[in-house]
Image 1 (tube, rainbow, N blue to C red):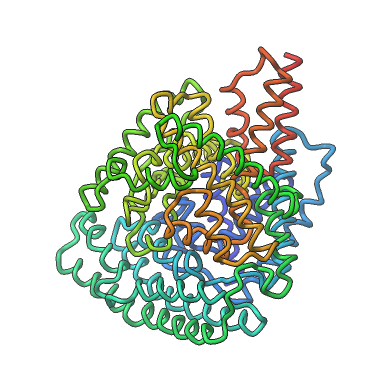
Image 2 (image 1 turned 135 degrees about the horizontal axis):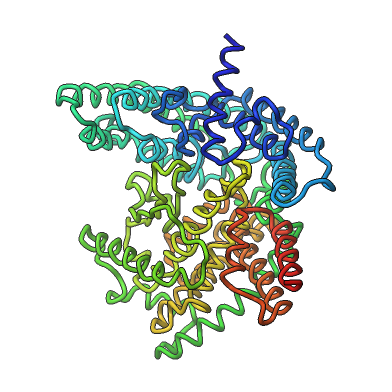
Length: 606
């Protein structure tokens, strides 16, 4: 059986890599960098059903072996992954970097950096809070099941219900891991425990029949041709029973554990509070910024950027007749202005969605003047699922499936429309959709003859840096704010938000600021609502370092562009520069800078 399983797994690998445009012979002949990197990626993917479904490569095909399953969440799986990582890293040493050229050389450098980084972080077995208010199986799997699991026939319905039952196993395994974390001194702060309990209770409070895993099913069943009403009812009943018997008890057990942990939890916010916390944060900064900058250096850059952006915001506010009070006070006045907000009802929410579609249409009309490659993949603009909106950010993006079965999606949080006044929406769209994440992630999927790793953009500083850079060029190059000064204020407010992140993230995790100090600083500098700021600060508590990626990446790309413009003069072409940055996919910033320097030399010699 083991041999048959390996052969079958190999066939799955071939299908995935064919979809990725890579050589299908890697499984048997891992003699090139691409094949070696793909071998690791596919071995990992085969053990990760959620990843396979997210890639959209083999679900609902004759080779679909995974879409009724969920991953193993045990400690043994983590140990297996660590061993697999080390084996993959050792394989990369087989290749002489002096003999590699072009994309293969780039793939080798990116893969080595990626593997070294993951191995460094994996060395900390107890490094964070695996269940919290914004991530972990209790948050991630419901949206995975409702949004990513494709239901197109009866077999896929049965697999969906199987996954609901599997969810119960995952919750049990995850609870055991949280208990193990606790035994080793890792428990969340009291306020994170409180929010996590609230999110878990909200998901199950209305019972199985009203749970999102059940209520989202009928509309999908209606699209299956020839499915009788009796069968539809039977499948809904089966899903309801699975939620009742497997999912709800799992959440109740997790809630009980968190309630017990709350009795002894402390209020300290920074990751320094857990064993090896300072080392864990240093590794997190390295991973998220893909630089060697220290927390102190990042903190000082943040303070400098906050001062610059505040002065630019003040100039726009004065030009609009808003003179009295601090910058944040005047921004708050605009935030609360009824004329600047969509009604906080279903009609207003639809108006906001329609406005975002209109904005996207406008920027896409201009895109060919600034980009050689414009995404072929479609974009949908939808609301954040109601069951997760309490803990979700204002907006986020999910990329299209590799096989085109699912479009890119920009999710907008519509719980309270006043969190996103009209004048803030253009920048949010430019960041998440065009020319931000939708352009960047779609471009990475179009690359040819590169390993799968390079198509899935695992480098925050690059991907978030590009999206923040996209906000900037919407003004400086594309002219999207030429007749919209308040929209430009929204751009600056968004940039201020990212600059403040540098300050508060390092403040909490390195300088030992409290949650309340961080909230007060962000409120003072951004003008955002207290609810929004609180959600953000609590996000940084459970994702140390992640928030530093945005501004670090943007500043790096801007520096690279300024160098290219200065060195090339009349030979500089913005469309070609953007093609270079996007066309090679995500990578660490140091490697990206090397590719820009090489491009400059080539252009100088042309």
